[in-house]
Image (cartoon, rainbow, N blue to C red; front, side, top):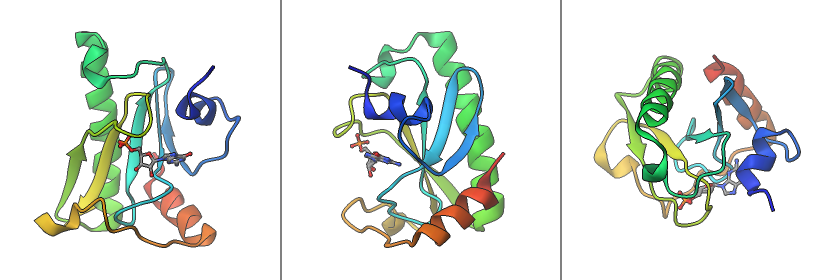
Length: 127
Ligand code: 5GP
């Protein structure tokens, strides 16, 4: 059975899309810890990020870099944190989180955003 993230990338489950190419897909995290919190996934189903082969992992990081540049310029943050957890969804993903200070990376604190806010943020970040 396809993972929830595959189903998002295939358009079967709605998301706030940020960027896409033939190999990778980026969309807003549905429970963001900061406005602009984005997930980058490979379209291919791989559970653990470091099981992705070296060259593809390099391309994924370049794709994430392009998305992060957009997040940084549009969300006006000091840095874009790069976090890999993978404890909840068994489909490799990189969290990109706009931050100004260390405490901005706290997965226990969630932002409550309206649908309009999600749409606006995705539109701002969109590549
Ligand atoms: P992790 O696997 O890295 O521990 O956490 C998975 C992340 O995916 C969480 O931040 C969670 O909010 C996000 N997430 C889980 N299900 C969905 C979903 O259906 N849509 C979106 N946009 N994000 C999701």
